[in-house]
Image 1 (cartoon, helix red, strand yellow):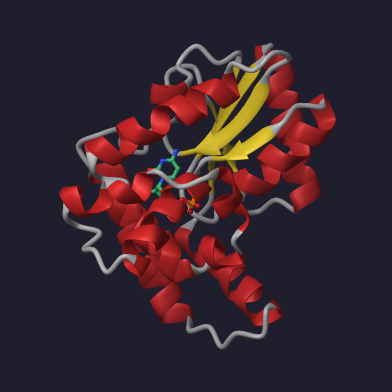
Image 2 (cartoon, rainbow, N blue to C red; image 1 turned 135 degrees about the horizontal axis):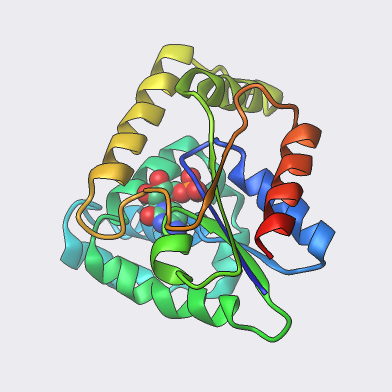
Length: 205
Ligand code: C5P
């Protein structure tokens, strides 16, 4: 069984994917981490994330890299969004994702193109979304709780820039996959969002 969970930054898709993983006892891959790993490696190598040839060597990271807490920052999220427009980067990451998706017993993957490109034949597909304001608010609370000094206006601007780049790129843009159910988490608690996600997935299986 493969479950695809797509959606924009801070929509709640990661939290929902993990909860679905516990509910259905399936392993979960946060595919955004792969693009973040490439973005961070390009930065460390002194490359330009907007130049495709500068990103190629960065795609050969080992799985251990995915545990690096530095991958979680908003700055690395923006870098990830810049390197992810390159077809060569996307191609380099397809195999890891398909291998994870097709492991015996099944899997859950969350990202931007799981239901459209990585696993178009997934048994269940969700597109998780929320208003820009709610998503920025979540990032704000998250940064505060980690001792940061977030600025709401720049969080909103970052999220909007990332949405625009992810939705308008030529290769595997963020969009609702055929057969996906929409789940708007703007006004939902985490528990309520997870309950709805399980109900939607159960209805698709
Ligand atoms: O989900 P997360 O915020 O960690 O993703 C970081 C960036 O990686 C996204 O803004 C997007 O540009 C890219 N990404 C992607 N395809 C995926 C997952 C993430 O292009 N499947």
